[in-house]
Length: 207
View 1: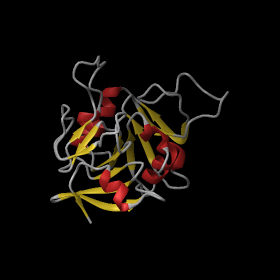
View 2: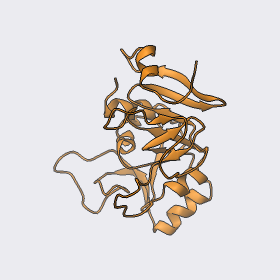
View 3: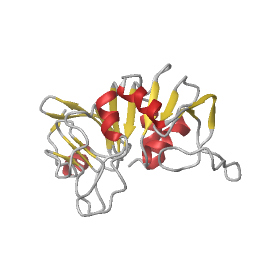
View 4: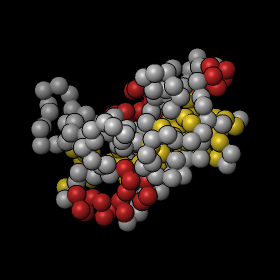
């Protein structure tokens, strides 16, 4: 199975030169380390356009943080602005793709990633605006939750962030596209068998 960094590296392969991309908190933030020589501009909804990779130990600047409060670096071209301008970019369709984490994804592309009922939530964050405003939504997450239950479901059980918004899902087991009738298996992680993946997936799978 892929580990967190390998999942982020695989997600970075989805990006193309010239794209403006928003990275969600969690595993998606690691994508910044794997854009390589591609001309990708990373946007953070807390007001930064042009995020670089994570800093090396000792090089951290506490004034440079992403939406998840992690220290980051600047890209060669970086701009700063208020969150209202940031969300204007998102709502105005200026961001080509968002790479987000998730608690659940349904086979029809429904996304649940902002709260678990009964648990303290600081706020819904920017995910609802992102999934409504960007051109493509890519989810990067573990295939199963801490109980070993599939996070790819026929229907989400948690409150939705967006309905029918997910295009592609990358888990530690493989890559899946949301298509009519279920999830299409695009790629399996090394040493993951088709039988293992199907056993651990609750959603309808299409070859």
